[in-house]
Length: 360
Ligand SMILES: *Cc1c(COP(=O)(O)O)cnc(C)c1O
Image (cartoon, rainbow, N blue to C red):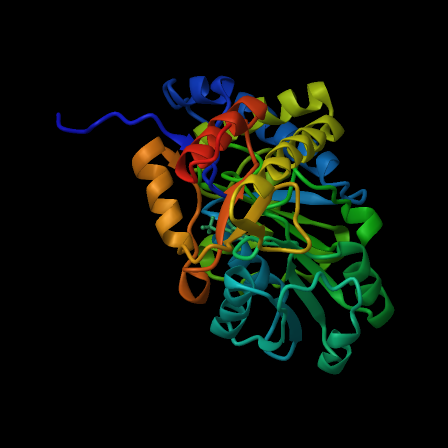
């Protein structure tokens, strides 16, 4: 065995630090799942997820064995036909992914190329109408911009648009309410705020979204009507990510025991604790509209963002997230999702102080 065990502090926007009670479940044998016990587990996961999402009455959740992109694709392929023009907010890599998925399935895309604004004013979208739907990543994780869901919700209401929200990188760290914001389909995934291993993705469908599904139109594995049918009795058409579902239940129960508000407050507090320290270093915030979930940072001293990321890992065993493409040199990201607390941020602050030779 030549693997070097390295102390690893994760501050990436997925995977995130997993709480120990979730890790313990991962160490057990995977149980059989075509039975009443697993059905009860899945049904409880569904009802707790619906509650945390503020889903309108009659909503349902489907559980896909996939990373988050699988749920994005399932939503697009099941909800839209080629004749449906959709507006996509494209403010970075994940907005681009939504647009790419739509095009892949022949859906007509009208893109709004966002450049750091939070769309509290939606006038820029007017020129893209008429359309059938609006698709947005509530938090564009490549840039750290949190869009104004209330404003986008009002825009959708005013123009009769079906509203699809990829909440993957802000669910459980930032406030969200499907019913109040008129969200018809909500996409979440296991490895972000849920703080589970990757491999489980969920689509929450309002009654309107369920009525809009096009059975048989999506790829066989992602036909959401089949998931809804089997889900009624707490099952899935194919082998689910059994262990992650068990971990999901433990996680949802733990959050319920402290309250969702307290979980969101944890993220807000930890993010603020980190952001308070940032002025000690030659770094500027990379976004004017930061979510609790993540802090995007831009070097102001000529260093390259990717070099800082590499140095933090090599010298301190700290993993923050680099960017690709045009943002590679200018932006890196520190996530606050998952089992992260002030003590974790202290480790990060110490490393930055040492790296920049700032006296603590
Ligand atoms: C992480 C993430 C996804 C999912 O990416 P996968 O690699 O497929 O899990 C989708 N949307 C956003 C906004 C994300 O942050």
